[in-house]
Amino acid sequence: GQSLEQPSEVTAVEGAIVQINCTYQTSGFYGLSWYQQHDGGAPTFLSYNALDGLEETGRFSSFLSRSDSYGYLLLQELQMKDSASYFCAVRAEGRNTGFQKLVFGTGTRLLVSP
Amino acid sequence: DGGITQSPKYLFRKEGQNVTLSCEQNLNHDAMYWYRQDPGQGLRLIYYSQIVNDFQKGDIAEGYSVSREKKESFPLTVTSAQKNPTAFYLCASSTYRGAISGANVLTFGAGSRLTVL
Image (cartoon, rainbow over all chains, first blue to last red; front, side):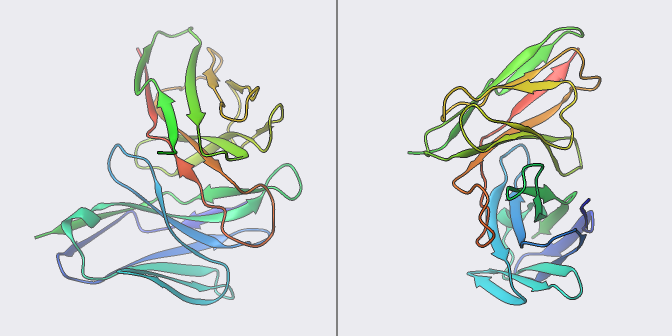
């Protein structure tokens, strides 16, 4: 099976930098993704890491260490609109061999204050 | 604009009733998924479909049923056998069916919130 652990809540102020960690356990690893979800809204894709290292997309960066089964999402220059829940997700083998499904963590609620 | 449409946005049901949640996409995506989200929790996979006329159980399929008669549509029925159906239901789709490399990027609908009275 698969399991992912994230902190339940993180708080920060506008303009700051925050890191959201994710540790995972999975049989067969195909990549780590991050999704953002505002309250009552739909999750939206942020980033994906298949290999070790840092991927940067604007103010957001994502890091992966496969040897440590660990990744993080780094948010810089925080804005009020970044207040949302952030989910890490791993690709896992589905019941049909060859079909990868996404398994999500429980999410980290980020609260950005003025 | 392409996207996924879920309806209804809010639904109330009496115990013992079946309800069907609609999911339509015009993204020409092959794969479609249904996830359930409970407060403060992550998304759990109910059913998924790679192609028309084929679907597979996810991690929490008991009490749910689906059909995939058209590429664009993947309705979910919450049956009376589902013991705790009150939740936020999210439909998603992706172009991506099973290759090893590359991100499996899911596009989500806005969700349907089901409350059992």
